Image 1 (cartoon, rainbow, N blue to C red):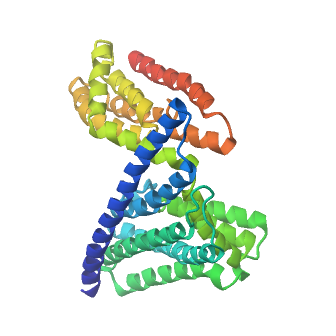
Image 2 (image 1 turned 120 degrees about the vertical axis):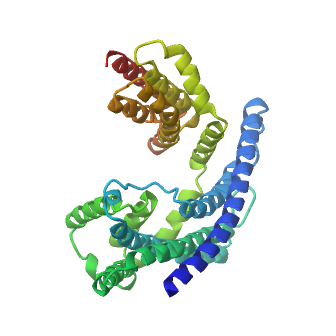
Image 3 (image 1 turned 90 degrees about the horizontal axis):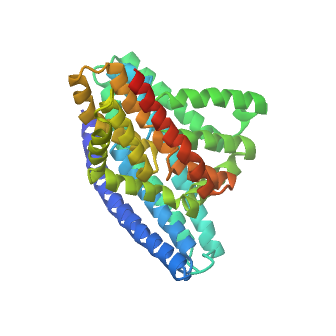
Length: 400
């Protein structure tokens, strides 16, 4: 079948592009880690920070984000809500995934297109950074390149999903899938060719898009693509098609080139180092040595190990992944000692939520940036509730 051959060729191309983008993004991330560490040491011990450290970090963030997103998409690493779609049959999942992938492809193709126009405007105006006078337009082009590479990966995913959806289906089902994708194409293109469909009251528009947001979130579409799509349509409604399209490219660049967000990939990288170094297993064994003799000691050790990992990872997602990893060790042990299955799995799931409170916490840093509050005070404010939550879990396990 021609669609199968196209899918295989597309997969080969996407794997090659993904590896290249991943190598570049990983190299820049390692460079940013060394650069940030050196800047902190020079700043606090010698009072001589690196000149232009903020703008250099912002440029590196553009590369890390828009080259890393390609590799993440190819390996299915983007966060999505599959609570509903996972309960559907394989063919229905393929149909829904085809539509959501097509919508994601449309929004990132628009970002790539508008980023090229934005980069051309920066080049024409000869805008550069304040300290090092580095031109800004090459990094805007990198946003376009990263979005284009992501679009190519999405085309490969779409071809695979269409193959699964069409294979063995009746002609009527194939026609229905084609019409659904055509409808998605018309809705994505509507802001470009006119605003007639958007002449509704702000209240009606808000209600409709809240419902739309909920539906596409539970369709399995990645959260980042959901926010990009809804934000794009909202910009078009508020500012008009032309301004909405141009603002999409500006938002993609300025959001990625943000110095305050540079701690997020570094915290996640630190969590990855700890995870692959076996810290989660060591934390579990240590907690078990302390708590194993108490009633429910195995479950308490799982919670305690999750709290310990939260203190280094900065991410609830990383802590939850570690909890699952520890669950592969702890759950068989708890099952062998005839723990209730609900208690055994519940302590693993609950322990994964501690990362948002126990510092360092990425959500608390983001909250402090958005609200202009002291991040140090937020860390102090989250420490005691996080420890109290872990102790409360342990007390509950003890009595159960």
